[in-house]
Amino acid sequence: MARERVTDYRITDLQASERPRERLEKQGAAAFSLAELLAILIRVGVKGENALEVAQRVLDRFKGLRGLQSASFIELSGERGIGRAKAAQVQAAIELGNRLSRERVTEKVTVNSPEDAAALIQYEMGRLDHEENWTLLLDTRNRLVEIRHVYIGSLNSAFARSGELFKPAILNNAAGMILVHNHPSGDPSPSPDDIAMTRNLVQAGKLLDIDLVDHLVITPDNFVSLKERHLGFE
Image (tube, rainbow, N blue to C red; front, side, top):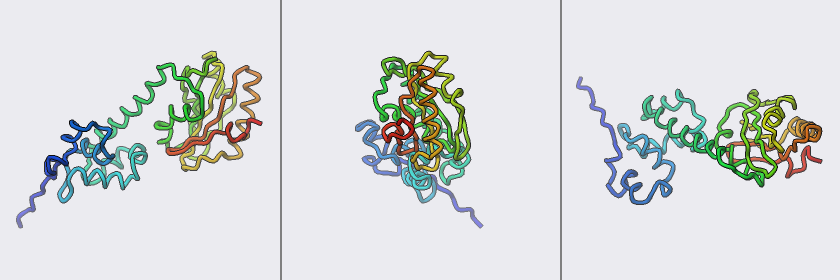
């Protein structure tokens, strides 16, 4: 029996006016949908699907960019039309985004609101599948000194001692500190333990003369400021 020939479906199969690379030259990357940007990385489709259709299917499978960011190499490479080489390209592009967000730390960023703090860490922290405690260390003008990954917890807990959380602030002579931890469940509602920890840290900060400026709970798409809700900051 003759073996059926498998044909690769490429971006070039589209009309020139619809090809992502050609459109990018004219319009810039910001004008593109997520599927079109991913198609540029994928380049080649599979039988019955061009690269753009593969990209859309993969985004649907992982429920958008956040899910794609959190996907493991094995999960991504196992998708039809992706494989190891394309999975590596996609994860490399995502890591470039992670590192670009971290480069902001080297600038003198001023943190004046919970939104400012969340913007610094949500892209990277929101992808985690376990809880972690991070601290944002601030100087006397609320300028960011450093972001420290202080404690790695489990799927639904990141309890840490007050001393562990304040140690980087003490060593860096920080005037203030924002505690941030994530909820992999996607629900940013603070738990009773979160509120109790906040209350303890506020008191410890007074003794150490380091202000606990806020405590944020982060998810991929949302966050809650305990200070804004007057939880633990009474």
